[in-house]
Length: 343
Ligand SMILES: Cc1cc2nc3c(=O)[nH]c(=O)nc-3n(C[C@H](O)[C@H](O)[C@H](O)COP(=O)(O)O)c2cc1C
Image 1 (cartoon, rainbow, N blue to C red):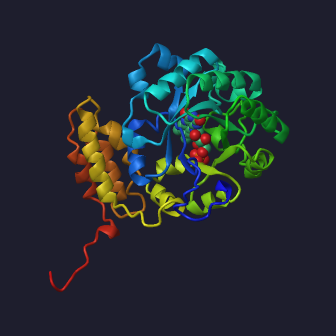
Image 2 (cartoon, helix red, strand yellow; image 1 turned 120 degrees about the vertical axis):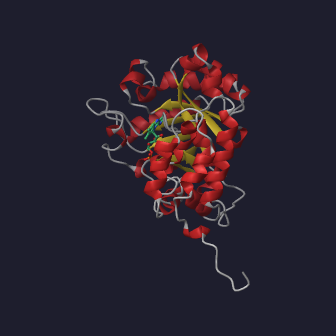
Image 3 (tube, rainbow, N blue to C red; image 1 turned 90 degrees about the horizontal axis):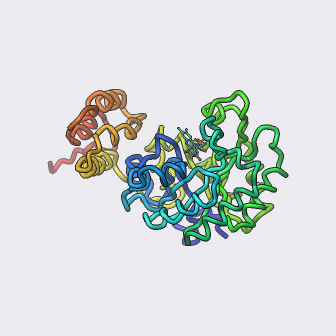
């Protein structure tokens, strides 16, 4: 029954009910810690990590995270079953909750490596990757894909891909509801120009009701999320979560806990404490602060907050209290102390 949840705090809620999308250069560990303050029940995703970078680079840099980030999925990019299997094993050892394979990225660099969205044309290879990853871990192995690529954009193409990959044991598909157009569009344009086709994703769920299908693409409000949840198991929010982080609170309230009422100032204080902790590992304040620039959006003082952070939080050895000092520029009506006659 997880498809037709409408109420909050539903015990049967799918673990994928609300996801924050993997976003390169954006959803790093500091960003995820911040998002966790705003949406305690959301499932968070890492940026895409190329399998080669984990296996031949620095696994600590790529895989380290804070336990508070969980439930947390790691997304890998690659097309070699043995390498991805080794990555899946590492993901489990590092305490992740899910291993996701990127079959949606259209960037030229990723295409050169023959992974990302071009894999949608190679369902047998993706099936082999999923099989190898599943053999290496007990974590759920999931696939994030698009609805098509170039002229391969009809429902039959998508259904063939999903059927083959599901046959290898993938039970969860996170679907960005637009195709990728590889000739002539930049990755950014490929997130904007091809039209969204939610009905394709709904049809996928109707065709494969036993699979968990999560909708991704263009969601800006909890109302839109609810509309998709009437058809599907979950929603994944990307750019809105990053640019308007406070909206995550509205998603959390609408989809899980109507009583969740954090204060922005408390979130800033939590982030200052976190920044102090990671400073001991050599993390500069701006690596944390840069994800918080949108926190005051919509409030008086938001621009000044952004400026104080972008100018004042840069540089070496900046103390974390700069976050709270910047917040002092913001007038948050929820912080207003009511006047009482006894005071
Ligand atoms: C800056 C940026 C980086 C992204 N990096 C990834 C990535 O590493 N892996 C991935 O699967 N999708 C990536 N995406 C795509 C998002 O996960 C998501 O599918 C897309 O933005 C559509 O969702 P939205 O309309 O809610 O933003 C990225 C998107 C953005 C904006």
